[in-house]
Image 1: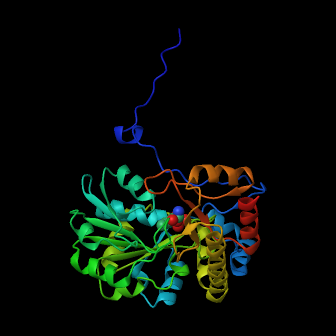
Image 2 (image 1 turned 120 degrees about the vertical axis):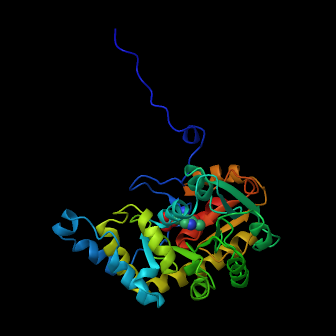
Image 3 (image 1 turned 135 degrees about the vertical axis):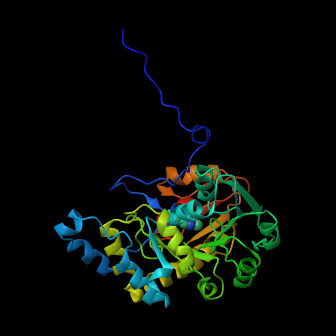
Length: 352
Ligand code: PMP
């Protein structure tokens, strides 16, 4: 008789959690209007494509530079910072994860205004960190006092916020940083589409970490590259925690080429911002309640208030958008800003 099959038991924390649910990725070649994961609808800079065309066998054979210094130097030049103020990551999700693992012990509190990026509680849970979601004040204003009152050791704020697209006032972030003893992470995944950024806080506050990504603003979501900007005291601690080869050789080359071509990237940002205005107006004309967005997506409530139903209807018509089955979001849909052609297809699916 065969011995009984053994089943390995995961940590209780893991077996009882749901895990993060990413937006759907269609198969290669599948034809859909993809407005569900905030990818940039334009291709990356031609310099990035050149990098891939010229990859050498040694680029593949050798381990990558563990510190991604070529990228750090290019980013330092771009932002007027020093190399030791920059850490590279496998997407900005990696930066968020490294920050949690560097600054929070099991049982510590991570606070954030809510609703926001739904990955924060997942990453915190994996480290047995407790989360303290604090409702945004009316008009999506940063609840500074309530965040401070949580007793958190770290606070995450997405600017612009996801999924609302709303900006966070610089004065409020600065006020929070100056009154807080822990790490303040400003998640600027969408900042290139916004009217201001928190970069100026870096020269004033030593406890601020800004995370950025190449996924949206540089059209490189498939490559996975993000980075953190902060005081060297924070970066050096995070360097100890990251996986030694957290960025692969090709992503380092691609990301370095992408941020070195600012004029190309800015052209794409302008097109996305113009289309955001048009998409917002078209939805409002159809009776939607749309929150004014500074990101590359909009969050809106259709007249029916039935987010799930409309999501399914659009999907059946070949248009993917994002529905969040979360408190306060079930009557809304989040729609990525695409090309004018994609907007037309979305509107046709809505009107048809
Ligand atoms: N922060 C926010 C607010 C996001 O919406 C996303 C994208 N899902 C990320 C960070 C992570 O992006 P990436 O890992 O592709 O850099």
